Length: 333
Image (cartoon, rainbow, N blue to C red):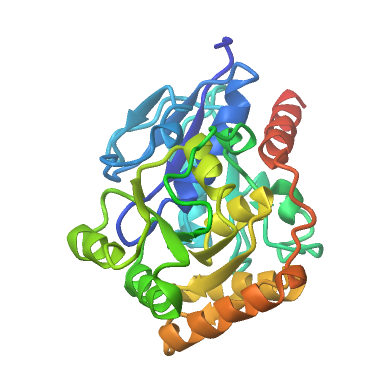
């Protein structure tokens, strides 16, 4: 590490929140680390069962009640703080020069003004016009999607299935409050429990493991995977012909890996993103709040019948490096 002041990341993750915020902050921290910048994770969230590559880019972890050290940047990836609270967070932190640090906000909703931010990253698909005030610098669109570097170096995976079986990735992200993993397994089993082999990727901290693994036993072949780092996830995903996934951060990961998928809305804040994915990439989208079994079945059958409808332009895996370089340029100004 060089002698420059650290970058502090403030966020929450885990049960009820998922791991998407941590995954993209880890991607940015890894990119900053390539430039010798120390990164610190400042959180109250439980780290048990979190994939190691989501924590490895951080030199240390501070509990949320501890005061952070003087820092060059405070990075906030959290929808909860209102504009006034962001102003207070920035004022309470210590900058390297004794004043306030610079503030970067990662935001894909566009509902807040974010006037306190020195830089905003909003990687929403197709976003070109800034929803923020004109004097707030913003990096917009999937060009700035923060993807973990391990996705670019997938593990070599040997599928434990017969060659006539079709592996299907099932991953509802770091939170599955609607029980959509079980629904997806039910749908695949009803379609053909011999032809399809579920590759279930699920965080270790989520409940319901025993029942879901029992559901997996209905298939002639299948595999259960927990706490995968990005390289392992990419290796398994690239062996799958299709996927059924939550409409969160995994969408950009599978899009980068060029694996066709059905996206299932499992949280209200995923609706706009899911609509954009459907419109721009041709991905079949399902509302997980309204008869998800029928929706997943119809969408999956569409994906099998019309595989050419799905394409993934605009993702090159270099978003984190672009953001890191922008931060360094602002810091040097």
